[in-house]
Each structure stands twice: as C-alpha cells, then as structure tokens.
Amino acid sequence: MLPGPSELIVILLIVVIIFGAKRIPEIMGGLGKGIRSFKKAMDTDEPTSEPTTPAGNQTGQQKPQEPQKPASST
Image 1 (tube, one colour):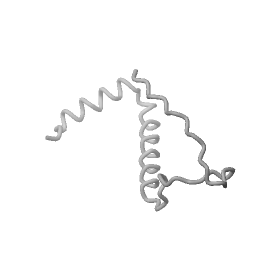
Image 2 (cartoon, rainbow, N blue to C red):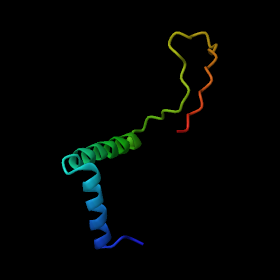
Image 3 (cartoon, rainbow, N blue to C red):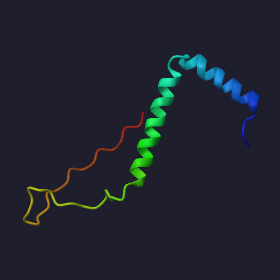
Image 4 (tube, helix red, strand yellow):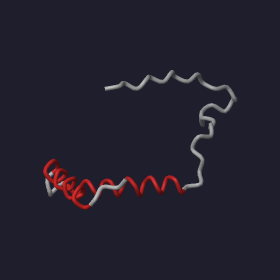
C-alpha cells in the first residue's frame, strides 16, 4: 500500500525540518552518485571473486591468510 499525497507532503516536511532546505540537494546528489556507481559496478563483466595469485608468489605456495575480525555491532 503506497502512501497518499497528504502522507508524502508530511514526510517531505519532516525531511526539510530535519535536514534543512540547503542540504537536501546535496543529499540527493550523493544518493544519485551512489546509485550510478552501483549500476556501473553491476554492468561490468569482470568477476571480482576469482582467487588470484599474488605477483611476488610465483612458486605456487600460498601465504596463510589473516583471520577476519568480526564486525562490531553498535
């Protein structure tokens, strides 16, 4: 169920009060850049999850990987 026109006006007023009228174009510009960047990354054909051999390690032996630290939840 989508919000009606009156609900959208109330939401818009709350956003203007919270962020101010001068910051809204800046926020929307950043959001647009993020969406374009995401779409560009989705359109690339290069797989990024393939394991690669480090340039200095040509013998075929792999270095042990450092354990990943768990993300802190705040």
